[in-house]
Every structure is written in C-alpha cells, then in structure tokens.
Amino acid sequence: MFHFIQDKKYHNLFKKYVENKTSFSLQDILGNGSYGFAYLLLDEVTGNQYVLKRMRAKHRNDDKQRAKFQQEITMLKELDIPNVPNILYDGVLEDIPFYIMDFVNGSTFEQAIFEEGITFSLKESLAIVKDLLEIVNNIHQKGIVHRDLRIPNILIQHNILYIIDFGLAAYIKDDTRMEDIENPKKIENHWSDLYYIGHFLLYLLYSNYSPTERKERRWQEELELPPVVEEYIERLLLIQQPFSTTEEAIKSIPTV
Ligand SMILES: Nc1ncnc2c1ncn2[C@@H]1O[C@H](COP(=O)(O)OP(=O)(O)OP(=O)(O)O)[C@@H](O)[C@H]1O
Image (cartoon, rainbow, N blue to C red; front, side, top):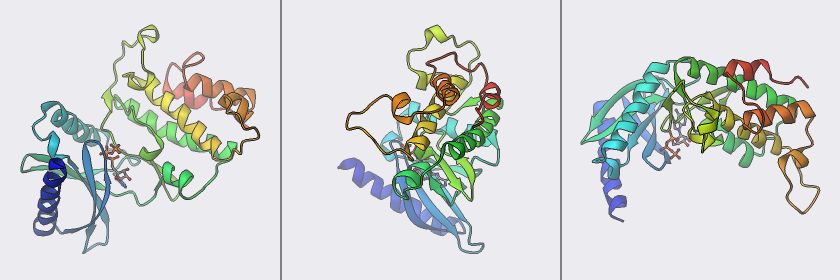
C-alpha cells in the first residue's frame, strides 16, 4: 500500500516534469513492470510519440537496482541500432533515474498472438526468426546479450521487428563453457538469446496449432514439423549441439 502511495506521488512528479520542462505531454501509462513504469509521451509540435521509462520509487535507495537501470541506459546508448529504440534523454528526478526513448507504435508478439489472434505459418515463422536473428546478431556484435527475448519484448511495426527492455541484458563473456551452464536463460553469451529465440519460434508455430488430442504432448509430437526444422529448434534450445555463433544460427535456418 505504501509503495502504491509513493508511486502515485512520483507519478504526479513525472507528469509535472514532462508538462513543465519538456515540449511533451504525458498521455498514458504503457506498463508497470517489476522495476519500472513506462509512460507514453506526445510531442505536441511534431505529433511524434515517445516513451519515458523510470525506476520504481521503492528501488530508489537500492544500489544494485540503480546500477542495473543505469546499465540499461548505457547499453541502449552503446547499441544505437535501428531496431532498438533510441534514447533521446536520460536524467534523475528526485533520486529516480529515468530515460526518454522512441516509441514503437506496433504490437508486441504477445498482443499479436493472444489478443489480435494472428497466426503464423511455418514459412512466415522462419522468416520472422531470420529477421530477429539478424537484429540479435547486431546486438551480439556490440558485445551485448539481451537475455529476456520473450514475446512481450519483441514488437512488430509495419513488418519491422523491434526489441525493447534491456533490463536483464549483460556484456558477453567469452569464457562460458557448456558444462558450467545451470540455467540457459542466464548465460552471458549468445546461447541465452538463441535459447529464448527457440521458445519464441515455438510461440509463433503454436499460433497455428489446434490440438487433436486431449492429452498434452511434447512440442515435437504436437507440431509435427519437418525433421530439419525440429533439429534446428532443438539446437536453439540447446537440446542438440548448440550453434557456435549467432551467424551460424542465421546460416542454418532451414528452407521449407
Ligand atoms: N519503446 C517502446 N515502444 C513501445 N512500447 C514500449 C516501449 N518501451 C516499453 N514499452 C511498453 O511498456 C511496457 C513496459 O516496458 P518495459 O518492458 O521496458 O518495462 P519493465 O519495467 O522492464 O517491464 P517488465 O518487468 O514487464 O519486463 C512494455 O511491455 C511495452 O508494452
């Protein structure tokens, strides 16, 4: 309850800041995640929209959370690639760090699949994964691994993909060994993103699946994919020989 009141106070503070100190107006709350709030801003002059992301008030005195938030800002600045929102401005307001970035006026894959009911064929799914891998490869080339490539963090706008939320991203460590891995999601190299992309591909493929049996079966049995596709997904998921680089994963995409 206290946190709720506290965040309301900071919500008003940020609204005042945006309206008095910038040329934007605060239009909406886009999301409130585990450690931040995202607001939609409108530039009244140009009509362009932006997103202000700020840390939750309860993390204000937590050095670890502050460092994580700061790292997210630093990485977004370092990335500077077209498929990741650009940062326009970053700052601190009453001890709450925040940044303003480009707004992607599209749908997350979570919305596309579960709210808009869009389905993806095998061919379309592989084409989307190819585009995604190209973007992710650019990110890896800059020494960064996202580590949270879930369907709410991948957006599509006019057939172009965007990746958001670098809150769990890490700098790539080159000395990771397969035998030391306990949780694939936390690996600090390309394997983590490929693992997430394997699951992402399964979400796309399941969008087109209607169960034929009451009992839930393994994805390999339910989806009945061509063996080359099944093997490809198993390699992404680290069930079979993992791809040694993201480029190798791109080159190995099966043609169907
Ligand atoms: N640049 C953007 N363009 C469009 N929508 C965005 C953008 N950034 C964030 N959002 C929206 O705001 C929501 C919250 O943003 P984000 O995922 O970055 O915050 P978070 O606090 O890390 O959230 P979570 O804990 O849920 O992952 C997202 O789900 C997305 O819908």
